[in-house]
Length: 304
Image (cartoon, rainbow, N blue to C red):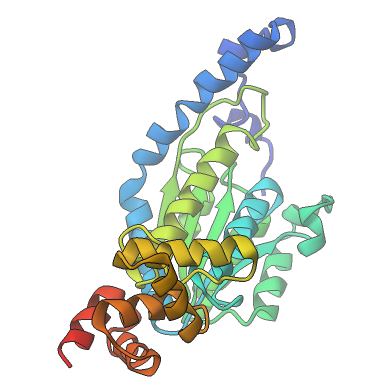
């Protein structure tokens, strides 16, 4: 990979608006950062059509038993991994359904593994170890758009027939040429020259937020705007599950708690029980017939 053009990338060029960063009073410095951050959401908005395509690909993969796999190095990889590990508690997914692979391995989340991002073969090895198949969708995250680790992973994913998505923060990115769906969120020069953990990292986080959340909504893991597949694994989440059941059904808190107990703590089942007057087993069957969607299950349950 030719690094001679790295300095010409938008994410690497100098931001003239913050050229005097070291001389700014703190209040001015923070205002400058905030002003730059305000440009990120509009940049993401311009990429919504491509993000929607990626959601459709992820939904299709997960419906057919495939997986959503994030791949990246450094900050980009950490952001993908962060999004992946939040899916099981938020949406009740199995840990392997949404995965994050980071150049240098899980330990690189805390301590950088120098040079790992420069080795395309590492990505191939990581994806082989993860059992990547044609049923999966791979999302390659690279703020610069040229990370060799990500390029190598996307190339391999296309070889095995997996759906491929790239996320970059420069236009005409190298990774875009290796993905079936190319998401380019052009964030421009950073407040601190070349520090893509700033605007570019924020943009990647916003894209991952959209990709996983919209996919899970499409898969029926949300009712209204409630996370009805939440796993109540601690006191806070037990209370949240109870409030979710109350908000979804209008039931009294004590009735919601009884339904949750009968449903082994599964908010989605408890909601269908209360809305349709069903037993736990009947509610579970209605959900099965409704492909996991409460709206579909309620129709099936009331229909008998």
